[in-house]
Image 1 (cartoon, rainbow, N blue to C red):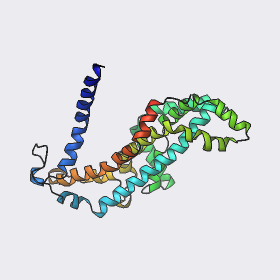
Image 2: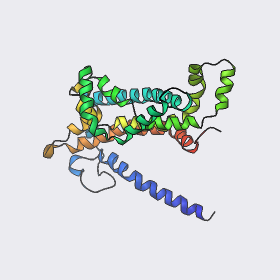
Image 3: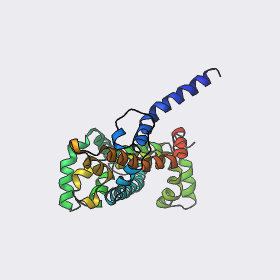
Image 4: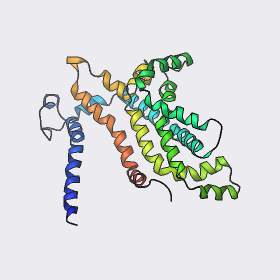
Length: 266
């Protein structure tokens, strides 16, 4: 019991250390340009001019694109990865071990080494400069398939056997029983996929040259232009672009905690 106050103090201190850069980012968004690089914990005068400059049609379009791409990639990837993980964990078919080994081996290949051939494939399919080019290559990830497979290996077979006795088919079994009980795995992977897609800069930069499909990270990078960079707008844009990620985390915080505690269904 004596260690409890020390533990609480340490957690508070570490929380302050982790949140301090985020606090500085948002406080700097309300500073005037001349005060931007002055070290202070609070602006001398709170100004909303930076936010007014940021909220322009190009910024809103890039936010819309990032939201659409990230949400689509996350939703479709959760469905595909859960189906693939369940098949590798439960179904018996020829070449299953070879397929799983091949999928896992892709984790050892750096993403940067396949960017050029991936771009050539997308170009041959005619999906560059489009939402399809931004979404389809990001759907498949061996890490998500592996985690779903490991989760389903510990999934109680009794539930599936009971459903099959009642005449439940494989598709209905997966959709109505297995998938809803996969929340401890779906929630953390949802946050990871959304965050990874939202922060992705290199692939959207390569596959898209049209301003119409520009994502927020590319838009933010294009604002930096040497000595003439409007740093007040850059910082305000960075702060605004971080809000959707914080909202997602806050909405799924309770489920995320439960998912971390639960390692399987007993």
